[in-house]
Length: 150
Image 1: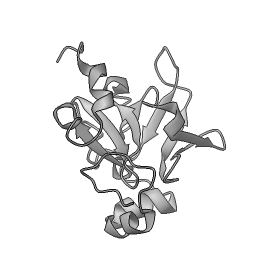
Image 2 (image 1 turned 90 degrees about the vertical axis):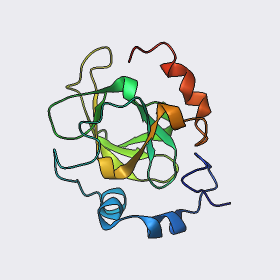
Image 3 (image 1 turned 30 degrees about the vertical axis):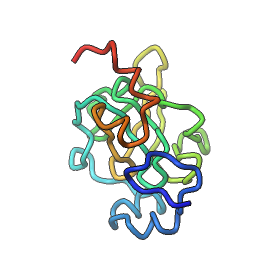
């Protein structure tokens, strides 16, 4: 079964087909461990409410509730949305579990309570706004925003 960007996460996604649809930057980041330029990427200053998913597989990675401005020019998060979807290689490299996409790096200089900073490339992710979570297949994550002040 193939995944489309409107279906949400499906472990049976067709990675080969998804890789063909990526831009050159998205491919280089997710497959060749490249980094995009700081302050010149899509989500470094995004303040919308929602979740960030892997651009290849659609697996949920991070929540806007855990995003903060680390003043690095890349999106930074204190923790993954679902720790089972994120793999740490070598202690610092952050990858998605099912697509094995390179996402970025994790550092131990983040705010409490975790003390971690997941510094992630925008090109490795797609942002799903709160209003679109249900129709995009991520309805299970909508409840976390019900009590959040906007």
